[in-house]
Length: 232
Ligand code: ADP
Ligand code: ADP
Image (cartoon, rainbow, N blue to C red; front, side, top):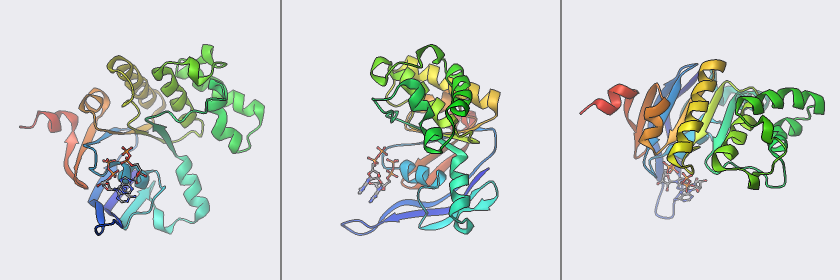
């Protein structure tokens, strides 16, 4: 599904180049919940921008569904990007738009008709438990509800992968558990691959099948959650 081979990412820095990624190999299979965990500065954000195809690595290969990023033309890149739904830490909702209109935004931008948008968004709001709140504004929602809007919005393009970038980091533990349970449900019921980037071990422990541990731009451990977290 997603394969990263020998990814390096080097940024120009004031005091010489910054090596944010120093040779990352990752293979994420269709249908799995894959956790990427590491402390601040480990290179997680740089890796996210490689997985969602917003950044080209300095060296290495990014493959999505067997296609290599560097050989894709712009149209192929756009369509590959649509296969990856993003969920963000700070929700990124527009305060002047209702729950429905926030979730519908990507489809509106894509020029879809109102009727078709409604047909796609209503079931998604249902799925995330917000059907009754579709006319509310973000300011009238709890953090967990805001993130559910973010998840519904990420699903509107019918992606194959849901990429969660610290999506529960701004939430309290109980809300975190319920948002993670929703992601797991989406993984099971819809067969979506879920990739979770986090600095919180409990997130990975609750729902990931496999985990990669990052340190200083490298994957230092990878395996099943049980193996990685029970190893001495
Ligand atoms: P994380 O998300 O795990 O905190 P990042 O990928 O943001 O890690 O950062 C990895 C390293 O690369 C850090 O040392 C960070 O300061 C550096 N870095 C990230 N982005 C840039 C950039 N645009 N320019 C220079 N250095 C960067
Ligand atoms: P996060 O905490 O979400 O990982 P960061 O604070 O690491 O975010 O990075 C936010 C933005 O700043 C990113 O676009 C990243 O590329 C950039 N950035 C991070 N570290 C540096 C740095 N040392 N120099 C320049 N830009 C950086």
